Amino acid sequence: MMQRSARALTLAFLLSLLACSLGVGAAQAQASTGAGANTTTAIALDHAPDHRGDPAALRHGAQLYATYCLNCHSAQFVRYGQWRTLGFSSAQIQAMTHVEKMSDPLTSTLRPDEVKAAYGAVPPDLSLEAHARSRDWLYTYLRSFYPDSTRPSGWNNRVARNTAMPHMLAALQGTLPPSGYDASVADLVAYLAWMAEPERQTRERIGVGVLAFLAVLSFLMWRLSAACWKDIR
Ligand code: HEC
Image 1: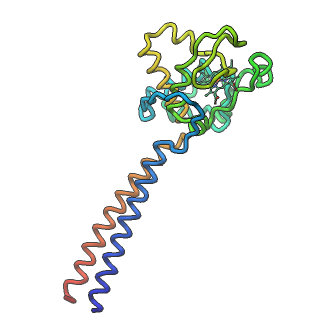
Image 2 (image 1 turned 30 degrees about the vertical axis):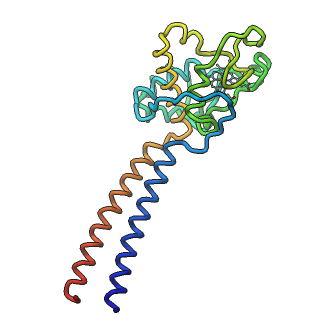
Image 3 (image 1 turned 90 degrees about the vertical axis):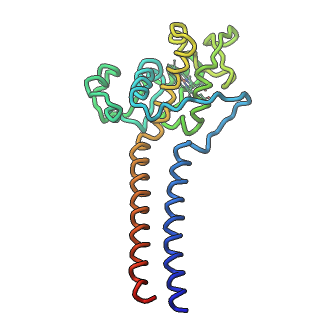
């Protein structure tokens, strides 16, 4: 009787370890899909190709951001120096942005009130935009501008009706075939997602390590319990 309840205890312990590791895995999976997106649009969103694991794509996205977005959009939670984790040298970052200190947060060159005077709205900080919207939303938004002479900027957008933002990527879109433009926007969106979660890759590595550790531990506990019970039985 004693023996049976002790064996049940061991089993319960192993099962709870398993449940625990499954829980960690599920949390990881959920975190990486960027759940909780606020999609305020009525049109169907296109699926953004996931370039987040591709360092070259992230660097291309950062370059696009520096060239086409940073004039207006700060990202106060990201520091220029963090771009080194994408594979840029400090000299390259300086050449791309004219930043003085690597510890400075990404700061727009135009003042928000100047942009508001010119375009009618303050450009939002984009640090967490990929969480606030979603990657699909951003991917569709940046590919949905169309000329509209009734708008002050001359542009309108199918996803964000009457947006004050002009189509900053119009020149890029004009020089690339549609598939090339889509791929560039996917890189930019991957970069925007990286800004919202610069530590994501580290966290995923740690998650995998934790799962491996739990697997080894479970195996050892199982062997240990078998060895302990061998003599008693
Ligand atoms: C000339 C200034 C300017 C530049 C450059 C610019 N934007 Fe904007 N952006 C704005 C303004 C102004 C708004 C606010 C629009 C509004 O509230 O109607 C905005 C809004 C946004 C939004 C929020 C949309 C929403 O409704 O949630 C996103 C995302 C965005 N911009 C992305 C970008 C990206 C990516 C780039 C670079 C390709 C970029 N912007 C370049 C001015 C700019």
